Amino acid sequence: MPLHLLGKKSWNVYNADNIARVRRDEAAAKAAEDAEEQRMQEIDAQRRLAILRGEVPPLLEDDAQDDLDVLRKSSRQSDPNRHGETRRKRKRYGEDDTDFELRIAKERTDPASRSLELSRQPTSSAPIVDYRGHIDLFGDEKTRAHGEKNPEAEREAQKKRREYEDQYTMRFSNAAGKHGTNSPWYSQADAARQDAPLKDVWGNDDPRRKGRDANRIVASDPLAVMKKGASRLRELKQERKRFQEEREEEMRQMRKDERRRERHRQRDEGESRRRSASPKSRRRRQRSRDTRDDSYDRDWDRGRRRDRDQARSHRRDSRSRERGSRRQHHD
Image 1 (tube, rainbow, N blue to C red):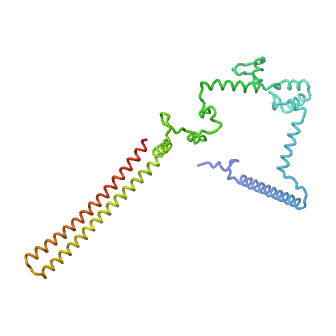
Image 2 (image 1 turned 60 degrees about the horizontal axis):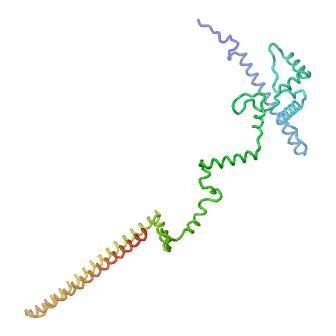
Image 3 (image 1 turned 60 degrees about the vertical axis):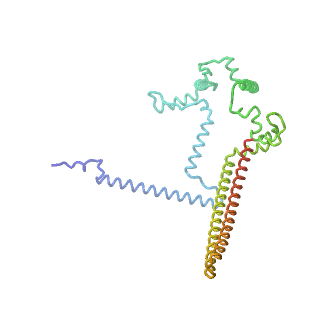
């Protein structure tokens, strides 16, 4: 038979007494919270009423507690008995609160203990370890002289040391030259370019040197090269378009001449039917027709040769201009 012992334990949360205690505690806490809320509302109402009346509103409890802490701290700092205190006193072994308070009061009133506390305070903030890492409890004249420096002498010594180091040392600040920090390097580029002499390598006057330099700069410019290539491409496209138009014009002229020749032939054949069919007249008409056809062919060949010569001269002129620009670039 199992034993039901949980209900008989005093710490069981499901006991009637524990449940009633928890409910009483919750009710008391709620009542205290309501009372605190009511008190805070009354304090707020009093502050608002004082503000409306033009009076100084009463301080809240938090502000009053802060002011009290500030007053305690200022009184503690102004207390002459606490002048020599640098750290909080602690209880000694086997000492209760009464003995601890009596000892603290005796130390505050005893002048010997107060002088001992004052003697324990440090008299100097200088470190006991020198710049070489050695412990020095007394110090010497060399150390004091090392600690006290003359600013003007230090600046003069640093200036001389820097001038001496500049003879064999390169710094980033000296990358612009000796007087490079006075003005930037790009501020004098135009003046130096304008003052360049217009002479050749033998010392002779060369008035065209400036133009050649400008052409060389333009030729070495990638953007100028791209523009030149684009213009050359446009010219080629225009030449191809013009050549295509000329071919189309020639084809139209050929078709036109062919149609004209066909109309003449048809007309001649119609006339020959109407006229007599004597061999002499037939030979005369054939000669006239051949002569006319030959004149048409000669005119068409002459026009075609003229167009071909014009296209060839245009290409020759473009090549000569290109060679002239290249020669100027090399010069």
